[in-house]
Length: 429
Image 1 (cartoon, rainbow, N blue to C red):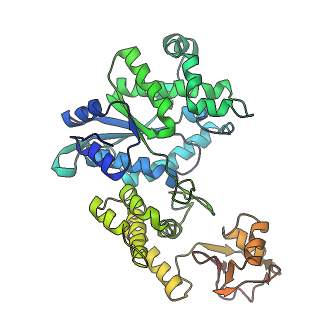
Image 2 (image 1 turned 180 degrees about the horizontal axis):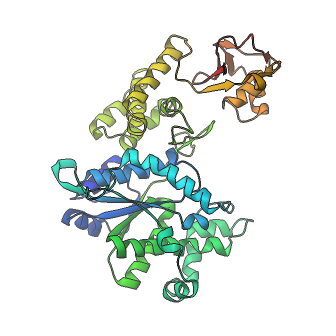
Image 3 (image 1 turned 60 degrees about the vertical axis):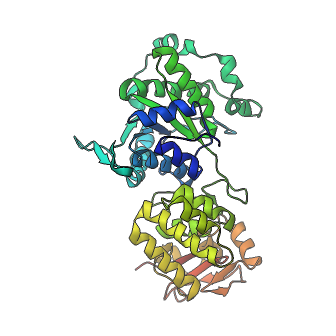
């Protein structure tokens, strides 16, 4: 990146590694320098919670607000009814309106941890450098999409889209090359997303859309539509699609998605995800997912040997504090130290409470490993045991046929998969 930005926001994006591409570096930089810029990122409500894969873009919105500008979190109450086909191998399952509403309500709780939202007349906040900024807006595109008249929409908006050009986007081409067809319903998605940008510009003077680099085609469509319909200058900025140094998609682990909702993933498990970062990723993740100064992130990331583990603990504490609060981060670290350094059980581990009815005359250790989330299936649990990867109360577990009865659960038992993943099994009273 050779561009030298004047605005605080663009400087942060470049220095900390958030920036993959921009439609007009200088134009956007000048707009950010001239006054308050309103920008948005869209989130379809396809699950009850956002996950770690969304966190990079949430941090971009946070930095936007911290540097004096106004972020919009656009909830896809309308677009979720269609489903984004970008780079997917098959069509998303369609959700009912009530499921979409429930998901949006759940996702909103996460955004409130990272952004300061408007409440009544309270719209001004103090930001980096003491300048005035605006509080964030949380909007739902169902507000303008649900009431569209199909024929008017085709005539007024559809005429601006070239099917030839839409077919040229990588997100569409990758799907057309597969056996699973691209439905006409999904093909409409990019038009609806483009229309979102137009409406946000009209209603809220929003001039910037941000998103992952897989959204580049959709973002460019929105910019083109806004210029064609109302001749307004707007911009697009994308972040890199992150993978870990060992090639895994960011936000995924052996146990499944790393959810940002504390009810779906405990703060301890969230903390452990960051503590288990590979050495090579530590410095990069400190810059992307914490607010520590860049120089400190570089210093910590350059540590070697056992010292890098302290950098990972700092990473885990900083990221967990942002989402779950300082007390949750401290409790997670204390539990981890008890589990790993003292061999204790720890009172903050993921816990399975078995009812007497579930326990019956006994339950197999394989079932318990699956119930605790340490394995996805009985087959995987058995393989974990045969490959010496399972432990029971810190002792090697070698018997896949072991049955656990009420006597064995007179006190909680600790199951482990490898050295870093643990769970407690207790008998509910």
